Length: 216
Image 1 (cartoon, helix red, strand yellow):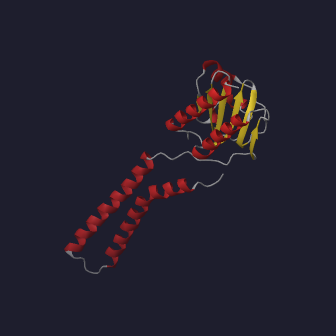
Image 2: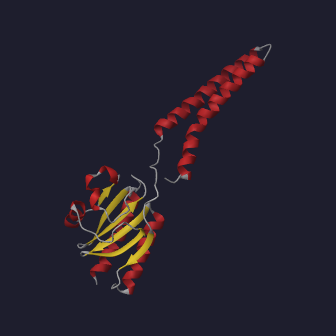
Image 3: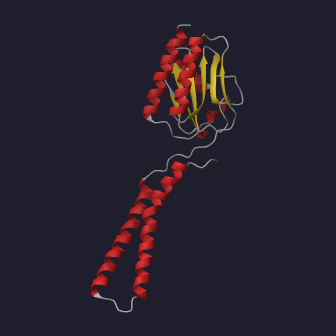
């Protein structure tokens, strides 16, 4: 699993008040031990220092509890690639390439498949072990109801076995309908990582692709 610099930075910042508080109280204790004659003003300063150190430790502990840890990302298993159906018009190929580039560079999507009218029109990103999409219960439900399904943590869903055309360690999946005959399938490298804004954007791109493909 690759280290995420953002996760490391957040972890350090959450622990910083605790470290500073413990360090400060330790230095105050050392100063008290090494001082031969303690004045009233120094005693008052020590009390204030102890209180401030305790507050820093308390703040650090609260941060550990209140701030949720971002989901950990993984490196998806598979080779990167870009495959398009050969019989697509050039304008459609360009639109698919444009849409997939936006999704791969602006969201947590690392693998995507465009499935339309029983055919895989495009695979891009980290490619799964098979290029064939056999619709399972989840994909069929999306096609029948015309509503998106977001599997926030794929490994906890028994139905994950139907997504064998995505990398084996895909963490999250969005199945977004494209008109009446297609589905845009996105695989993420981290669980619970698509925001509501991402979902809205994905829906808009899928609608645009669906309109384009219906005109073929």
